[in-house]
Amino acid sequence: MEARRAQRHLPRVQPGVSPGAPALELFWSDGALEARTTALGERVGRALADTARRYGLPAPRGGGLAWGLPFRRACAAREVCDAAYQGGLLLETAGTNDEVAKVLPR
Image (cartoon, rainbow, N blue to C red; front, top):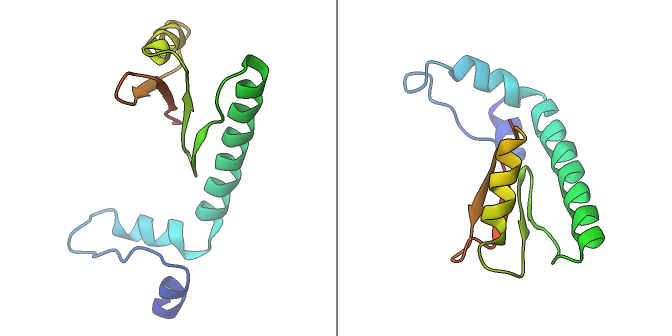
């Protein structure tokens, strides 16, 4: 197991530090979580890229499940996030002028 963890760059879980250590070890043991996260991240990236093309926005930035959609106008992401929240979707702004809407998957 130790060689497998090192080979795949998996985090070392200290059982005395984390009461959830056995669950974390199980999640990381077979690569399924990593594969699912990668697949979902690619899906989010494609959806945001399609949205950016459709509305003439800059290309999304990110990877895994952490993605952001930049806007050209300062504070535009704040307006998008507020509208999304009203519709039940949680987004977060980023950037020095709130020009990026970040997706927060659950």
